[in-house]
Each structure stands twice: as C-alpha cells, then as structure tokens.
Length: 475
Ligand code: UD1
Ligand code: CA
Image (cartoon, rainbow, N blue to C red; front, side, top):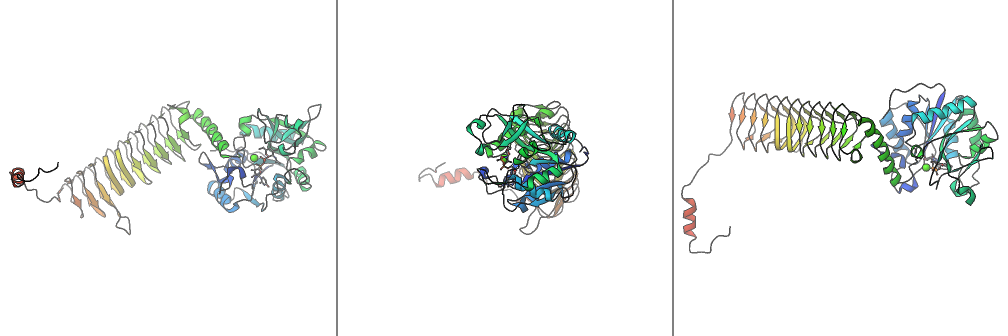
C-alpha cells in the first residue's frame, strides 16, 4: 500500500495511539485488527509514518496487545515499530505520555497519529510537520464538518487564534454549535509534548486524561498553528458503518488510479486492494474482487464475479465469470472458467485451458494443455499439449499422505479416468475412457481397464414377454 519510496525526513518521530478497545464496534476483536480493504486498521498510520521517513515509530497498544503486535510484525517486520503497552485505557493523553517515555532522549519533532484515522494523505501530514517546524509550535489538523457530532470542537479567540479544544461530552450548548473539529493529529517539538502530557488532569465528563488539553497549554506557551483537512481525509473509524464507507472511499481512489489505463466495467462494484497491479488495457468486469498481491497482465480480461487472491494473470489471459483463484499463476493467453477453482500452487502455462467445474491444487499444466470439464487435479505435473478428459480425477490422497501424478507431453486422458497416485502416464500415451490407472503407463501405449462389453440380443422383448400377464412396469 505504499505509494512511492519513503522520503527521508530528518528528525521526525511518530507516535501512534492504538490502545483502545473500540467499544462502538461491538466486537470481540480489537478495533485495530479489523481489516480495512484487507489490511488491519492499525497498519494505515504505520505506513503513513514509514512514507514520511519517521523513525522511531512508537505504537501504543492495550486491548489485545499481543494480537495487534503480531499483526504489525506480520505486515511490517520485527524492528519497524516499538510497542509500548498502555495496560489501562485512561485516555489519549495518558497513552501519549506513555508513548513519549519511549522517546525520552528524542529532541526532534513528534507526529502523533490515531490508530483509527486511516485516510490521511502524505501531503497533509508533511504540511503539518512543516508548520510545526517552521514556527516551533504545536500544529493541529482541523476540519469543517456538516455534522460535527462526537468530535472535539476547536475554540478560537476573536483574532481567530486557537485557544483550546473541548470534547463533545464537555461542550456547552453554544460550543456544540461550532462546526470546526479537531482531527486528533498533531505535530510538535518532543520537549513540549513530554512536558505538556506529564501534567494532565482527568477533571472532565469522561474522567480521562485528554491529549486535547495540550492545545490550551500550547496556546499560552509555544503557540498553536492549525492546518485544515477535508472531512473525508480525517474520518475516524468508530463503528462498522464507518469502516465500510471508508473502505469504499479507499477502493474508489485505487480504482480511479488504475482505471486510467485499464477498463473497469463497473468501478463501484469491484473490490481492489492497494497491493494490486493492473497493466495496460486489462478489462475488469462487475463484482470482481482482487486481493493481496494479485497482478493482472497486459490486455487480460477478468470477467464478472472472479475472486483472485495473490494470483498472477499473464498477458492476454481470459478468466471467464466466477473463477476463484488463490496463490495461482495463470500464463499468457490462458483461458480459465467459468466456475473454475484454482487453489494454491496452481501454475498454468501459456495458452492452457481450464474449464468449468475444474479444481486444481499444487498442479502445473504445460503450454497448450487442456482440462476443460469437471475435473480434480491435485499434486500433479502435466506436460505440454496434454488433453485431460471430462471427469478426470487424480486420487492424490490415501488418507495419510498426498502423492504425485505425472502426465507427460502429448498424453491423452479419456473421460472419467481415475489416476491413483503415485502414477505416471508416459509421453503420447492414451488412456481409454473410464480407466482406473494404478500403474505407470509406457510412452505411446494405450491403457484400457474396461471390463469386456457383452450384448444380449432380443433381451427387451424376452423380459416384456415374461411380464406380459402382470402389471406393466413403471417407467
Ligand atoms: C479524539 C479526540 C477528539 C477528536 C477525535 C478525532 C481526545 C480526548 N479526543 O476523540 O478531540 O475530535 O479523536 O477522531 O483525544 N486511545 C489509546 N488509549 C486510550 C484512549 C484512546 O490509545 O486510553 C487511542 C484509541 O485506540 C484511538 C485513539 O486513541 O486510536 C483515539 O481515541 P478515541 O477514544 O477514538 O478518541 P475520540 O473519542 O474519537
Ligand atoms: Ca476515534
């Protein structure tokens, strides 16, 4: 999800507050773990901090700390962030104070981000940091909201200078009419933040230590500078409705970008995660979902309802509707679906055809090979120019272990064949329909396991005669 290379910005540390449970999510899981377009919420501010070149990055965690830390390590590696624990959530001010303890010797600028505000752009944050630096002030982000309910209100004096921020629950009816709100994002000299957060008091409606109280302190000290941000960018995720609407916004941005050189038949009806690459002239149908590190090659066509996760689609390949693929590679010019299921380890060569109701797993098909109907191929290596007939099944599991099937170049597998692994079918060998193959087939040989067919002439009439005096059979 990084857009471009991180830009080194000297002397910038980042503090991310993410200890809250997220009560309004009504979830057993910490809010920070809820995925937003496939990425846990807590990762968004971390990625912004990385883009700004901030170091160190301190994340304050509390509720389900171990799980959130695990998610952070999985995404960003071991040493990227320093985790500080806030065992009891006594408020944003308390969280910031604990986090700053990990920056004890830090003398530069500190950028404070909230774990639940994921849409802030690099440009907005860069401008905020600049503002704090040039004036040596506390810089805050504010927004004009049509509906400011729930947010802290920005109080200014007659000259328009910021005096303080008052939380919704503490505001007078007059203050509640103010529509300029605090985005909860700050940049300030580390020394000021250490000092200001050391002496906060919980004398307020929620009995918490509010980080917002540092604004009044700065107003009578180092000074407050403010920068404005759009309502869309500052959106905080407090409930599931907001999670979903922010996900739509993010998705729209990504599709807007990719949609300049690829065609999205219905841009509103697709899910495209941030790590996706789509090359020129690709076509994406309705209700397509592209997740993880999926790559779509030049001129490939992904029809309606396909769901691709960490899958690579080669140039000019066609995925017919409702193909589901995970950790698969689809070669250039291949044709897949409708209703194909490509599971992890599938590797389709150039011009391969895999048709309806075909399932593949850990299976490679060489150039031009075909498996067009109703087939299961697991733990299989298939050469070039092989035809796999309808209803072919690799019996790859004996109840204890998975075993391999090999089908060499140019072989022909008749319909309704079972290949009982481990087994090998040689080059240009022909397996007759309905075979159960339990031993290796030699190159160029015909394998046939059919019981001999017998025909009994006049049978129908004889049976009819026998039953002539009884009731007619039900047909
Ligand atoms: C906060 C601001 C409010 C602002 C709004 C913008 C305060 C007191 N209020 O309110 O002025 O308009 O954000 O979105 O700061 N957290 C901790 N430890 C705690 C409490 C919170 O780490 O003890 C974290 C949460 O996980 C969350 C962030 O701090 O990521 C913000 O906390 P939240 O309770 O959502 O604050 P708001 O009520 O939204
Ligand atoms: Ca919030």
